Length: 378
Image (tube, rainbow, N blue to C red):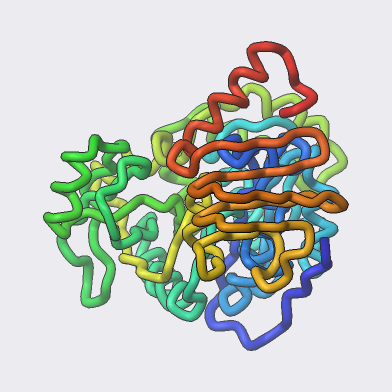
C-alpha cells in the first residue's frame, strides 16, 4: 500500500483530530480480517486506504502533529507506515479493545496534558465522505459550539428511513448559528418509526462524529463514569513517564467496555449539554459490500470492481453481468458470466459469493467460524 503524505497547508483553527482505528468490519469479510481490518484497505475508489482518506480529510482543520490515532497493538505498525506525516507519539496503542469511550477518553486526556482547553474532534477511520469542503465547514461550525462548552455531535441529514443507524432528536436552535440542542439519542428504530422520524424533519442520523473541548468532555465523563474517568486519569498522569506501559497494562483491562454514546452522550443530552450541526456532505459508513457497491464508480452495467479504478479491470473478466460487486485478489483471475446482483470476494485463502441484498448477513458467517474455532479465517 502506498505511503500517503498529508500536505502542509494553512490551517483554519486548531482542531485536534482523533481517528478511531479499531474493529474488524466483520460484514466486509473475507476482505476485512482481524489482522488487516477494513480501514487499512483502499476502499475509497483511489489508492488511499480508508484510514489515509480520513486523515487527508482533516488536513484543513488539523496539522499532522494535531492528529492522533487510537488503534490496537496488532495494527499500530501498519497505521504508522500508512500515515508517514503523523508523529509516532500520536499513535495511541490500546492494549485491548474497550469500545469507543475508553479510546476517546484516552486521546482526550493525552491532548489535555498538552493543551487543557483544546478542541478535539473524534472520527471513525472507515467512513467515506464525498464533499470535503462541506465537511470542513460543518466541523468548523461544530467547533464554535464546542468552544461555548457544548458536547457537539455531527448529525447527518437522513436521505431515507434507515433502520441501521441511531437518531438524534433535535430541539431548539442554540445562539444565532446552525447549532441545535440534542434532546435525546434514539436507538436504531423499526422501519415505521424511522419513516416517521424522517418525515418529521426533526431527526438526524447519529454518525458517531464528535467535537468538544477536552476539559468539558473529561468533566462530563467524571460525572457519569467515575470509574472510567479515574482509570484514564491515572494512565494520563503516567503518560510522559517511564511508568506509562506498566500503568497502562495494569489499568486498561479494568476499564468498562462501553460506547461513548451510552457512557456520556445520552446522559449529557438529557441535561442539555449536547448540541448538533446537520451535515450534508455525502457521508457513508461502508458497512458492507452492497453499500460499497453503491458509493464506488461502476461500469455501464452497474458492476463495481473494488480496489482499483473501473477502467483498469485486469484480474476481472465479466460477460453479461449486472450489478456485481467484485473484489479480486492479486495473481488470480475472477471470471463471471450471466449473473447479476452478486457479491464476489476473492482472497488468498477464502472466497465469498452471496446475493447483494444479503450482504448485511455476512457477519453470520464470521460468527459460524468463531463457533467452529476456525480462527485462521477470521
